[in-house]
Amino acid sequence: MSGTDIPDSKFYYDNGRRLMDRQCFEEAVIEFRKSAEITPHFKTFELLGECELRLGRFSSATEPLKKAVQMNSGVRAASLLADSYLAIGEYDLANLAVKVALKRDPTNRTALRVQKALEELMNS
Image 1 (cartoon, rainbow, N blue to C red):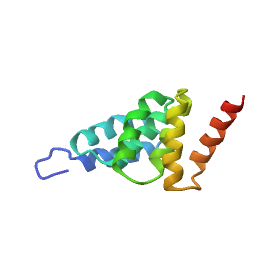
Image 2 (image 1 turned 90 degrees about the vertical axis):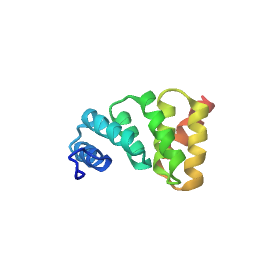
Image 3 (image 1 turned 180 degrees about the horizontal axis):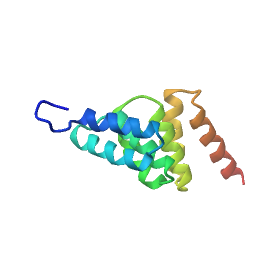
């Protein structure tokens, strides 16, 4: 906490991480949202999106994951975004997210799995 006893972004982020570690995803979502309101950071958005995915709220996962993809050049958020789009039937958007993820890391397993699922959907 800061010297004024008002929780800062890191306080909420750390709480969210601890809650995720304990599989308390609903509570972690709340903490990550508070953290992002104070200081938007790609990792906060990525973990917020991951919690939404783990709760089965695929549509809710897309916004924070899109922000994470835009804010950082890592592969994880892009692959999670592809997974969430696949789950809600947004196949064109899933394909775009797969392309971003595989451009960042051609060996990313999540992106490759989503790519395969999309190919199977197109061939069926």
